[in-house]
Length: 423
Image (cartoon, rainbow, N blue to C red; front, side):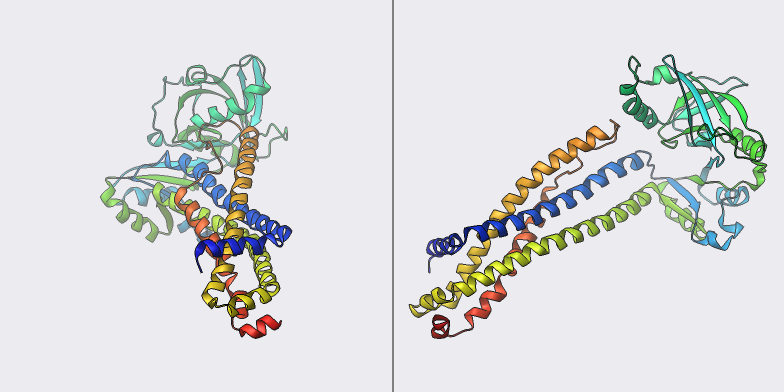
């Protein structure tokens, strides 16, 4: 049987039941659309999360943190104490140490911008100056606290508040440097009362620099000052302080692995920015697998619909199959007919699915971009299309639809022609 004739007969078989054909094609289209949405959205998440992390990346920097799994044992040897940090700094090939301390009691700031006053709670970090990429713009006065902020904090402010504050200007490096901030250490602006043992401390801070090395949210002050405030408010002696994390600068990339191994032997987590990015990639991979698995469950309903349609079609066409076989059609010719029928349904469903995906992805992406702040590191699309991945996914969808129709066809072809004709 010629392919052209087989396609013509397959079309006639499908047109006998138009409603069933379009319903099954639509079901496959929905399954295809869901798989595309889940697959591309997981790619969008990766593009949103990884760039901000990797922007700080340095191949010779290790991020050292407590091994939180071992902290359940309450072992001081597994915490980043000054003594343990000193041991890390004395390791061969370590050139410098940068400590980061998060003040865990509530803190609030008051700032005047463009004639408007703001007051809010804010996380405050103490950090060693050697991990800040930019130097202080101006020397700070003795009575003030120099503050370093992240450029992304400026992004967030400009995208979140400017539209709701008519007449205000956008923050820039020029109009934020030198800005005074009133800091109330140890008191929450939300609760209105201090939640620490000692009275809160009020101080004046001045924005003296912008650095991508500091935490995105909150403000960063010199570590020496943070330790002093920690002692005055929470009675924590600097010698007893537990640090959040430590940045270890290694002499060269050749020694990063060696230093990392030594730190891990001391009971800490030590990872390069590349490894941190790898961890996030693995986490996103798990999320993607879950999303794709959920999508395939939905798609399997469409496959069941296709399986039912072909099975019913084969049963209804047994007489025609019997006639074809009596007049000389071979089993492979009959198999070709129904595979072509399945291909037409699958191809129609995929076109419908891609069309629905394009519409939904566009409107969901527009909604997300209008809902989220206009932050510089957000992707242009939350549903980026990777041609190799989409092509692979299309191939898998097409093959699954074809193979799902073969069992009912083969079971009918096992019957003798006269028996099929009699039935």
